[in-house]
Length: 296
Image (tube, rainbow, N blue to C red; front, side, top):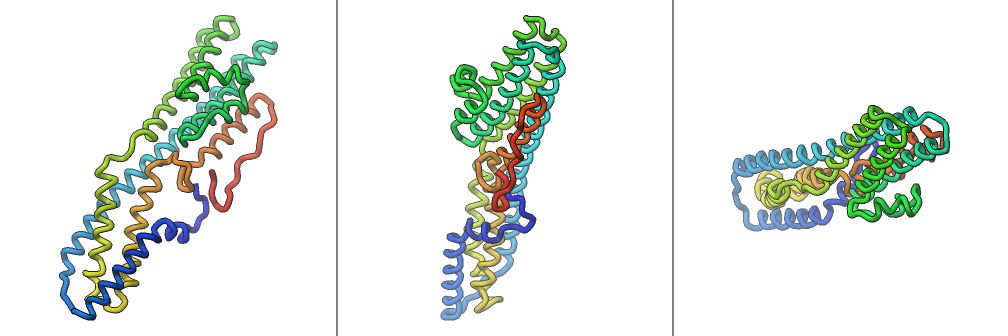
């Protein structure tokens, strides 16, 4: 996620420069043709077309941002649920003893491995290194042995809580409370997977891009009579605005694609890791800092 206050004009231009270069050459060609063979183009149809195009781009950008913001809300819920799981575990398994102490630590480390595995899955990366960073190969196998590694780790945590109840370390009320936290975690994961696996409808993706490019082709024809020799500059700047609006929707539509515009999953997972390790008294790493204005 870009955290700089000033928008990256260079980044915007880098995203659209190829289309913009073609547009500029087209603007120059239309302007040259106008001065060689003057013509008259009515402005009203182009104005109406631009208005409709703005509505299309607005619908797409709003839909894309809603997906981005929902993803951020779900990860905020994941942070809260992870803290609640650690707090409930340390409170309910507070009796000192090798069994309870090991179980507290195991559940916390499994949750850290879980959120990092989920981050990797959403970004289409291999979760194995992050899981093995916190868990032994035997424990990691519960996740690595499944297609959905994160869900496998969460199931294993639930089984450990149930076993703790059977052994008398916690009662049924405490087990039910922890299980409700695990359900919240599973619900948040399901919401993230829904966003990741469900693209925008084809109409939201195809028509805005098609009409934007068509509008950019018609733009110099409608402006050349009024702008004259300045048509390439005016038309290119106007085209840049429409192309930038189109690009914004494309950038936000997948909040887990591991680009500079996405939700900073790495920083969020590091926050969870810090909070959970401190909850059991282990040394914790430093929070992630932005690199070149980008927080990953």
